[in-house]
Length: 181
Ligand SMILES: [Zn+2]
Image (tube, rainbow, N blue to C red):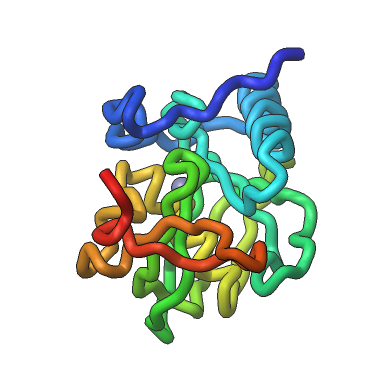
C-alpha cells in the first residue's frame, strides 16, 4: 500500500487548521486510519507523533511514540482516540517540531505532566499519566485535533530555528531570523 503523504502546512493550511470530529465507534474505518497513520509515521523515521489531520483526516485520533527524548530510540507508536486532557501541570520550555513543518524547530512552553482519558486502538477506555517529554508530545498531538500548531505556541520569533552542519559535521542551531532568505 502506498503511504499517504503528510499534509505540509504551506501546501494545505486549511487541513491543519480544521477541528477534528470525535470518533463515535472504533470500527474498521478507524482501524484502517490508525494503520495509515502508523505507516506514515514509520516512513518518517525521526517522527515521534502524528495526528489524523496531518494526513487530511479530521477524526480525533493521534499516534505518539513514548520515550523519544535525548537520542533514545522511541517506543512503538500507540494510538489515542478522543484524547481528553483532564489534568495538566509543570509547564516548562522544551524542544518542539512537527512533521508538517520539516526542518523547522522551536522552543515552546508546554505541560510536562498530563493526565489524559480516551480510547485505545481496541476501543477500550484508558486514563493515563504522561510525564516529561512524553507529555509534550501528547500535548502537541492533541493540539492538532483542535487546529492548533506548534508555531502558534512560539512566544518570540527568535525561538524558531533550523539546523545546519558546522565545519566539523556537528548540527548547530540557526535562528530563522538569521537564516538567509
Ligand atoms: Zn505536529
